[in-house]
Length: 249
Image 1 (cartoon, rainbow, N blue to C red):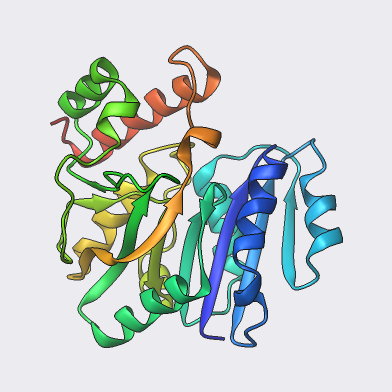
Image 2 (cartoon, helix red, strand yellow):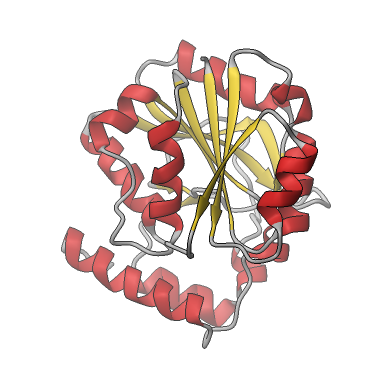
């Protein structure tokens, strides 16, 4: 198996079906697999996916166990030489997925590669990030997600940011095995930054590659109130992350 895609969903049936439909040509490839982890959905997501797609492996969890646990559940079952975590609010193509895999083959110094992410209207998202310190988080809250998520001057060539967001990350199997997966004490964010930091400690690079594009319709699935349960869990995860790395800024 060359490529394993792990997609996580929770009560986002239509968004998930749209994502999987964009990957139908990939499903026909004998050396690719898609693993869908249903994180406790009650909207019939798993049943609809099973009805429409017979080549997708569906793992059903009894409850929403969080991003890290959900993704690790899929990654543990993946058999691909290259493994990819992909958000269910993305619209991808097989050519983009294979391009990421080819990039890893040609650049053994790279531990994680991520594509350029755009809104459906073509605006480039800032999926390449600095350390998610308190200053950055406060600035994002004040400015608003709509403003901070769009790149004013997007990079035009591959470069190495501090981390790339977990909406689309591909990495070799040995990287996953060396790191041991995502930190499951982080329910939701910043498990992606934490994973990139662990990969960098292995002496490998984190690369944002704008030559490869995937659409990320994040407004449909990830926007939430600052007072929501998800926002509170995110704040708790950030505090854990800062204590873990003994760094706040």
